[in-house]
Image 1 (cartoon, protein in one colour):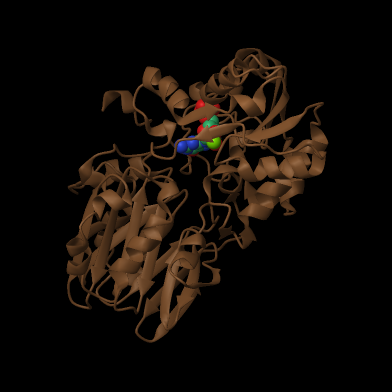
Image 2: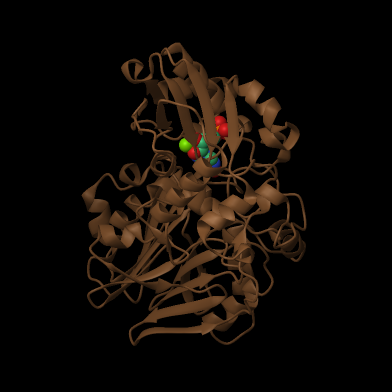
Length: 460
Ligand code: 5GP
Ligand code: MG
C-alpha cells in the first residue's frame, strides 16, 4: 500500500459516521480513495470509492446504511498498486471463519516474491496491492483462529505495516516490529478508537489513550481491549518523514507532538543556517510550523508571503509533469506587498524533486523579492523510500545526483541550506536509533529484497 490513513472504532452505535469524520481528518494522508467497512456482529458491509472522503460519502443515506457498532476506514495514497477502483481499501473478503476486511498503511518489501509464489500455487489475486498478500497468507494459514492465522501471515511479510482488520465481532490493530508507521489508541466514552494520527481522535471528541506498540497486536472486542507482543521489536524505525512532512501538526505520533518536533527542526535550522534577511516565509501548509520555529530562533519576522489555494489536491498526484509545473502556479500565489524589495528566507520542509521550490523561487522573485534564501528543515533526500513515502526511485530525487551547490543553481536562489542529519536527530530529542532515516542515509532498517515496482502515473 502506501502512506495512508487508518481509522477504527469499536463499540459505538454511530460507528460508520464517526469513522467518516475520523477519515475526514486523515484526508492529508491520502486523497486517492476512501472506504469504510462496518460490522453489526453478523454481516460486514462496505462502501468505497475513488476520490476524497467527502466525495465518496457525499450522500448521508450511504452512511446510514452502514449499520453496526464497529467500523474500520481507510484513505489511500497509492505507492504500490495502481490508482484503480479495484484497489480501494479496506479489502473485504470471505474466508474460513467468516468475513474479514483489512486496511493497511505502509509498504511491504517482499510482497512481489510472496505473491509470485502463491500465484504459482494457484492463488487468484484480485488487486495489484501488496496488502492483498497479507489477506492470502491469512486465508491459507491452517491455524485454528483468526489471530493465530494473522500472526502466521505477518511473520512472513517484511517491511512497513500498520494494519486494522475487522471481523464480525472484533477489530484487530497491528504495527510492524519496527513501528515504521504510526498507530494510536483512543477512547470515546466506552468506545475504543484506533487511528493513524491522534488528530482524528480529537475531531470526534475522543481522547488519546496510547500508541499501539511496534510488534504489538491489539484486539478490541466485547470484553474490552486485550493485547500481546506478537513480534520481537528490538530495533525501532519510526519514519522521521512523518514528523518532517506527512503528519498533521496537531497530531501526536510516536508518542510525540508533531508541532513541537517540527518547530524544533525549524529552530535547529536557524542555528545551523542563519541568514541576513528581512522576513521568513513558509510554503503553506506543510512548512508553516518549521518556519515559525526558524522565525522564533532567528528573531526575524514570519510573514505570509505565499497564499495557497486549498481547493486543489496536492501537486504530487497530478498525472503529468507539464501539468505538475502548472499546478504549482495555480496552488500558490505570492503576496507582492509582503515580498517586494525584501530579502526573503523561504523555509521548506523538504525538497524531493525540486520542482516545487524552483517554481516558487521564480514566483517570489517575480513578485519583487530582492534576495531568496531557501532553508530546508531536513537533510537532502537522496535515497528512495521502500516503506510507503512516495519517492520510490533514486532518479526522481534531485539530491541523489546533485550537490547542494548544484541544487542551489538549479533552484536559482541566493543561498540554500539543509538541516544536517545530526541537527535533525538532535532537534527530535530522540535517540538516533529510534528513527528510520534511510531516505537521507541509504541505511535501510529492512533490506529491500526486490526492487519496488514504481507505479507509473503516466501510464494511467
Ligand atoms: P518537490 O517538488 O521537491 O518534489 O516537492 C517538494 C514539496 O512536496 C514540499 O513542499 C513538500 O512539502 C512536499 N512533499 C514532500 N514529500 C511529499 C510526499 O510524499 N507527498 C506529497 N504530496 N508531497 C510531498
Ligand atoms: Mg509542502
